Length: 269
DNA sequence: AATTTCTCCTGCAAGC
DNA sequence: TGCTTGCAGGAGAAAT
Image (cartoon, rainbow, N blue to C red; front, side, top):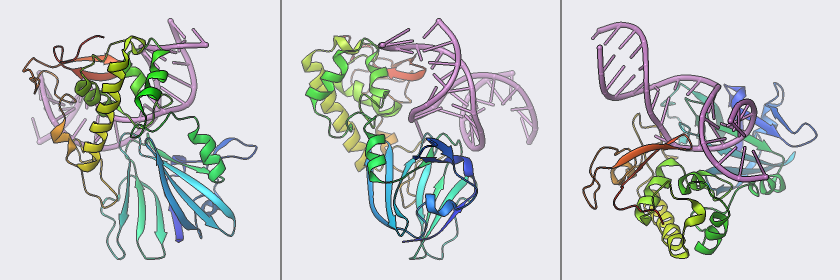
């Protein structure tokens, strides 16, 4: 149950639905848009988006939280001090006395408030299938129709949801596919290997608690950083030797994102 | 119409 | 030490 909501930066919250479409969080009655006096009934995820579904007297509301590049969503136990006071934008006080904190220095992330489950489903229909469970056949269908670089397609959340720059590079390395390869050029066998690689990389990363880079920006709900950054085979290793073949790893920009790959292990289809 | 580049913002590390 | 520069996990808008 949410007992109180404190908004320190109004512009990280967007209210969606109704005739107005998308609008900034109003000055008044902010709580009703942010689950105040509601019971959090479920927590869901699709790709990189997290949703809190709340129900109260005013009806149902769904909050999407997206961490962007530098966002954090964590719990502060009852009575504990707020550990990082800077860049805290929204805090939810729960009836247990714990606080749920949304913090995001760069503010590329945010909170979207939707009128309910149906609006959430509509919003998530714009995303591709979740990367953790997408099957090779479905992935293939979504890749064969486009000539763009496979790296670029993997980053497109409407193709599949949940792969970002780190895991795109790691998955392509594991699958042995050059990031500049045209998506439409992948063979059925390439797609099967790629789907397996995406699943393996994401599952290992989850098991390791995620990738926490310099500054310790990513933390889980208990404010603990992950350790998967130590297992990165290519991401952040440009100029270093490939762990498989010792060739020097190369880097280039693809769709504006730094991309690292092994020119020997990763081939054009 | 499909793709890429630009832009938003702050923090950190490297180089001078 | 202190300054400047470049780069960073994302994704929507603008440009091509």
